[in-house]
Length: 122
Image 1 (cartoon, one colour):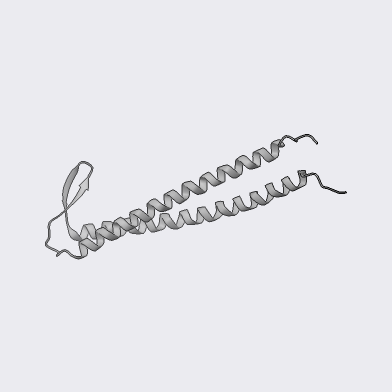
Image 2 (cartoon, one colour):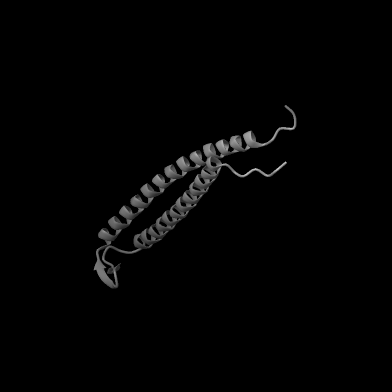
């Protein structure tokens, strides 16, 4: 029996499967970044809640530190938190779709491989 070469269609499917896996990995990294962003916002919000309304606050604006009002900072943090939550939700949906596509493609690849495997009896 000679070793058969992988047919082009199967090579394409395997390459597509690898791309899907890489996309899933990228999304997982982005989701982790959103979780870190949310944790940072939560820490900042907790610290702000401990301060009085009359405290002087500064926020980073590029390479500068500028004075900011507490009410504006609270609002900005809430907006950042909402944005991170929304982004995390979208990434979760993308991840689910990609995982489903990868699962279907894996089944197709497995079926293709089984179809190529020589049977012991006919």
